[in-house]
Amino acid sequence: MPLRDQPPVQADVVIVGGGMVGATLALALSELPLQIVVLEGQSLKDICAPIPAATTVADFEPRVSALTEATRTLLDDLGVWDHLGQVRFCPYQHMRVWDAEGTGEVHFDAADLQLTRLGQIVENRVLNKALTETLLTRDNIQLLDAVHVKRWLPGPRGGVLSLDDGRSVCGDLVVGADGARSRVRQWAGLATREWDYDQQAIVCTVRCSESHQYTAWQRFMATGPLAFLPLATESGDNHFVSVVWSQDTDQALALAALDDTAFMASLGQALEWRLGAITEVSRRFLVPLRQRHAKDYVREHLALVGDAAHSIHPLAGQGVNLGFADVAVLADEIRRGHKRGLSPGDATVLGRYQRRRKGENLAMMAAMEGFKQLFGRDELPLRWLRNTGMRWLDRQGQLKNRIASEAMGLQRELPRFGAPRGPLDAGSNLARQSHS
Ligand SMILES: Cc1cc2nc3c(=O)[nH]c(=O)nc-3n(C[C@H](O)[C@H](O)[C@H](O)COP(=O)(O)OP(=O)(O)OC[C@H]3O[C@@H](n4cnc5c(N)ncnc54)[C@H](O)[C@@H]3O)c2cc1C
Image (cartoon, rainbow, N blue to C red):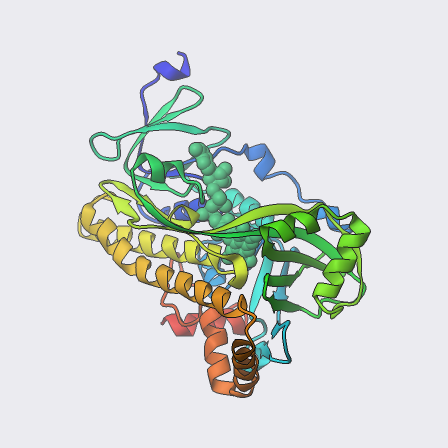
């Protein structure tokens, strides 16, 4: 029978988008007796392709994520960490943040918090592969790969989703995990509030002449922040770094157009040669920077998670961590509802999810906006205030530790999933205690 003539695939929860956030939601829900369908545009063959050993800048995926300890605990609960392998994630023990216009600098050190690391840098494709491989081990998750959702027709329960291969899918709850330009959000008529920064991020991988020192480096310039994030290799080479250089659009276009030699010289200078010279650079990608927030994350039988609900400036590397927190809370509310006999798409369940997540996401977006404004100004009094403030903060042990643990997600009460495991190390142990 042709696919278009087959009856719709039936599920309790249909997740549009099997990226980092959508795949994690499927895993978190799989402990419940629910049928879950994940619809993903990329093919399984591409997502699960072997990752080549990294010996040059071209061997890394340019998109990386800085995972907080809260995220790591969630992924560990869901059994994903076992699929990640031991090599291609880089723990960092230090974070150095400084102002280009002055002498203010803050140094965060994991040792001050009695931890082994502040977070970990993972290439997105490494994490996506591990998530997908874990997902394939769950009996109640069906992954339809290499399919695009073309249309959503509202109807009873979650309506009907039409796929480009002719099939259709129905569920009690439809979840939009389809990224910043979410079609699900548009189809559902969920309006957004947006800020265009007229900035672009240049994203690439470089090799430096000096070790990255397992440190996340961030220099704030009036034109935008420059981040150097340490990368791991199979051979233990610690000279590879992922770069996110946010710049006003004109400047970003001009920099991205430079030849490799000139670009490496400009980049080395922008980081004040703290990691020596840049000796190798990958292809550069330009990503427009836009902060976007859906005014509502839910409507009848439909919810948004991750970038579909909110995309924020990458300056604090928090974007996907907020998405993982959405997942933990939505799955927790569905679990609570299930115990009370409510279906996943029940309005009470979805309303509680929105109430628990919107405030934190908005607060993080406001903080990013504040940082952007504070460091984007060049007036002398503001420069003085910034630098004096950074020097002062660097001497305040307790306050500094509080800020670091907030950024690491240790202050967040994320719900727990799966059978509790033994502590892995000091980092996750502390995260566990803070959740108990
Ligand atoms: C320059 C830059 C640097 C960043 N650095 C960090 C960082 O250090 N730390 C951090 O936490 N965050 C960072 N972020 C943010 C992070 O990348 C995003 O928050 C994250 O990718 C969002 O994940 P997601 O799963 O919600 O969406 P996506 O990653 O966009 O995934 C969406 C998925 O849905 C699929 N899809 C979309 N439409 C359809 C459709 N119609 N049918 C079927 N499938 C569909 C896509 O194929 C994709 O797999 C950064 C962002 C940028 C731009």
